[in-house]
Length: 80
Image 1: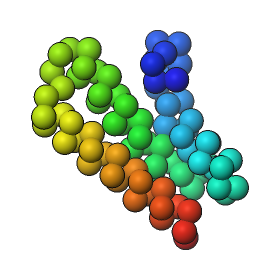
Image 2: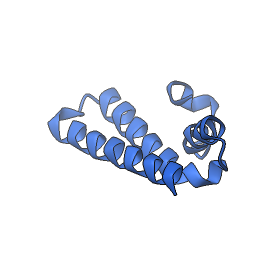
Image 3: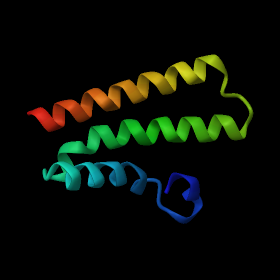
């Protein structure tokens, strides 16, 4: 979905990982919204900076922070 951003509403991107996690773990998808938002932010950052040729080391560090945060959020959502 994030590779076809022009055909989708921006608010749809965070819902996709949340919906998938909800289905996979058999819990309400709303529980996974923070996870989905962090994943979507990482995807958006990567795509927008890569298109402009300005990703660099700092961009990759930020993406790593977002993804690590998303995994922590997912763990919390599963285990609460």
